[in-house]
Image (cartoon, rainbow, N blue to C red; front, side, top):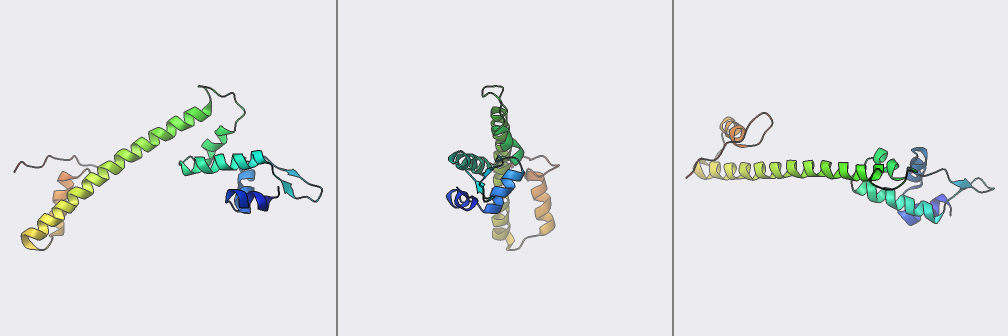
Length: 146
């Protein structure tokens, strides 16, 4: 199949396919007597693997490892890349959970401030947030019991 057909079938642009070739993710295709690139079903499947890996957040360098001609198994770089990506995701999830908690606390502070006097003192709000939120360089404190 021609590059335009591969692009249509995989949802990529022809320039993206050429980029994958230049970066070593796709092998150089055979060329017909007319000089056109010729792709196979294996290339289609390889593009799908690349797109799935990208959607899972793998950088291109890690995706290249998926196609290294090393024996599959526990020592394979693919498994190491997957494990590394899982660790990265766990860190991102923890950071997002902390941000979510901090944002909820900020919301409660805003509501309480508006209920008490209707306006917000930015410096008092910043000071309170600094002592209660998980902001860099500070430690969260426990809320006083009511």
